[in-house]
View 1 (tube, one colour):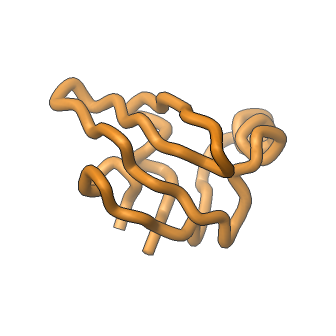
View 2: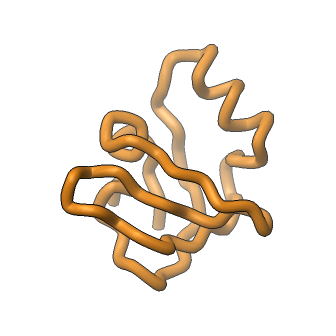
Length: 71
């Protein structure tokens, strides 16, 4: 499933990131790599999602969160 479909309060593991190389490297630099555990803190109707990765909160837009596969 895509990260954009994540439920609030659920934990997921990153399975795949299908973004342009530059953006994918940027996410890897902040700790979002394959196998990383994440927690969905908020999933807004507008499409943005707030997640917690390795103790830090991040907000991602819908276009980015749709291209991150989680399980």
